[in-house]
Length: 162
Image 1: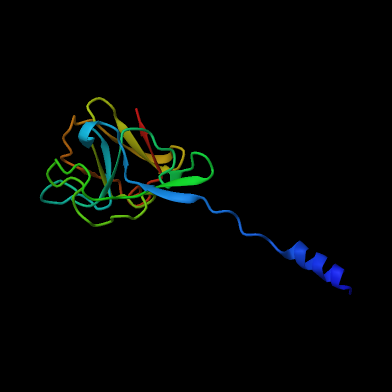
Image 2 (image 1 turned 120 degrees about the horizontal axis):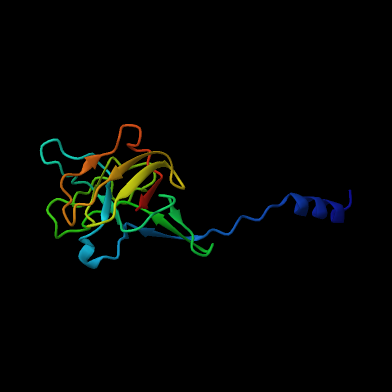
């Protein structure tokens, strides 16, 4: 074989790596003042004695179609993660370090709804499908947190605000 044929064959098998989107991380998708009226998904189950979940959390005040995150423009990927020190003005809510910086999708064990009028529903599948659990509003009170149903625990893929 000639050098030109070998070069053409090797070029045909060469695959350039895909461009990687930049990744950002978000634990707070709630724009309410001081994060005091949000829906919180917690990494750990609620405490048996306190009824709070003191682990890291993710807060939102909107529906989220996929708990892994979203890409607004193809060049950026916003990944949803748990964080601590959110809603620090509230006793033991989102204050623990357990689960900090881990991804939200399929990792929540409990939730609480601090909004005043909106209900939330957590779904097993992305795009609001499969088994779900509803959370009633408590208007700024994150007590008690509710453990997710056993089938939903660590199998949460989306949530809807309604």
